[in-house]
Image (cartoon, rainbow, N blue to C red; front, side, top):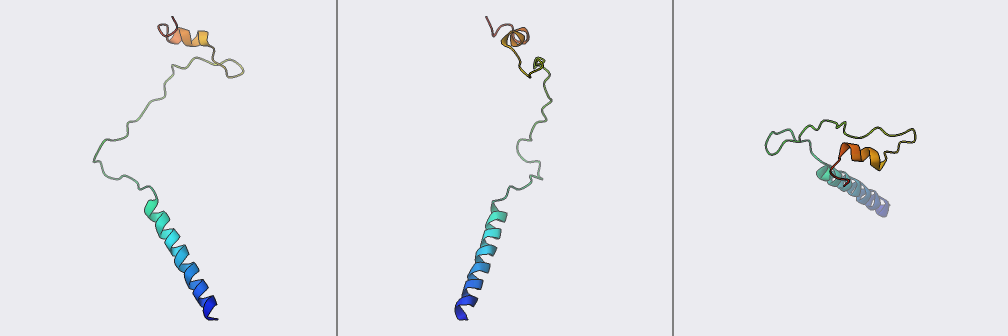
Length: 70
């Protein structure tokens, strides 16, 4: 009987320890404005239109970036 109580007590302490450890390691929301803010990035439309299979060929990229493919 005493070993069952000990086992249950150890299991409860272990579960509480795991929960506290996970809560301590969880990422926190940054509600302060101190530091560098995360920039809002606009989606670029510089990607060439893919073909019917979703492939963008090198010649299409050469039109977008003419000096990269000399």
